[in-house]
Image (cartoon, rainbow, N blue to C red):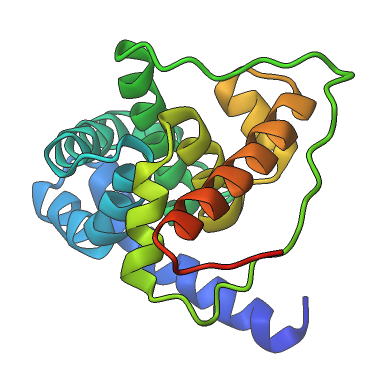
Length: 191
């Protein structure tokens, strides 16, 4: 990390640390400040996983309540946003588990599906978002965690309780299914 990034990172943590410290002391005003800083991003995270606006709102609210109850355990080893995002992801996945979404566990020797690159540059963002929402919950969750949230396969496998190869296979199948959906909309033609 270069010196400039190190200074910016320290400044970022210090700005939020004051509010976090106030939250640790029970300040509702500070909790509201943190909520205002993060609610849009955390709602987006939850929505991409649960795929329902009302449920995503509920999950996000529960995640914030949980975070404020556990804020004493936040040690600043990662940014507060990353810590909170992990809580939101876990709460969202708990919601899906209650709905009995099954993440496909695959044999280690599963035949690999060819991973080809999609050229999404020309796709309308709204069409792509709609196509992702059409994926089954299992595929959508892995795709969102990997491509949008930036988790690697090891982290996804730990979060979802599946093997590393299952995470990889789910992602490949999600991409394949996404291509099929987009082809059906005559948006994406891939040979």
